[in-house]
Length: 201
Image (cartoon, rainbow, N blue to C red; front, side, top):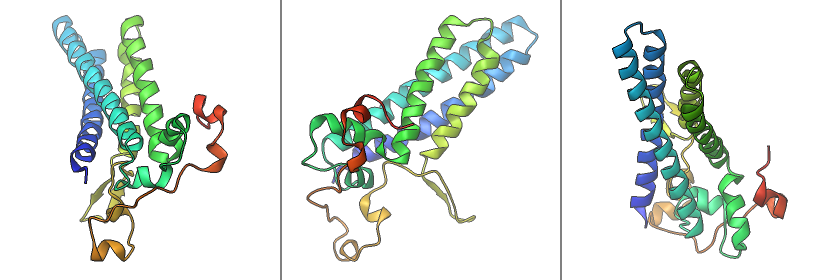
C-alpha cells in the first residue's frame, strides 16, 4: 500500500486551499489599504501566498499523475480511470477523465494565468487577483474531500481516496488491504488522440 503519496496529495490540496484564501485576503487588504507601507506589506504577503498556492497545485498534479502512471490501484481514481493495458498516451487522458482531475486541470491553468497576471498587470493586480484567488479556493474545495461529521456534509471529492473507503464491496470487509490487479480503464470515448491533446470541455 502506498499511503504516503496519497497523504502528500491531501496535504497539497489543503495547502493550496488555505494559501489561495490567504492570498485573496491579503490582496483585499492591499487594495483597500491607504498606508503605503502597509499596502506594500500586504502585496508581498499576497504574492507569497499565491506562489505557495501555485507550488501546491503543481504538487497535486504531480502526485495524482504519479498515482495513475504507477498503477496504484488501491486509489479509487487510478482504479476507476486507468488500467495496465492502456497505451502511454492515454494515461494523460486518465488524468482529466474524472471530475476531480478536471477541477485540478482548471486549477493548474488558472494558477499559471494568475502567475502571469502577477508579473504583468501591476496596476490591476490586486482587484483581479482577489477574484482569481477566491475562485482558486473554490476549485480547491471541490477536490478537498472532507466530511464534516456533525453536519453529515461532505466538501468536495478527493482524488486521493482509497478504493476501500470509496466502495462497500465485501472483499474490503474480509481483506481491507485488497488491491485489484487491474483498473477499469479509460472510457472508450476518450481513447482518441484529440482527447490526449485537448480535454473535453
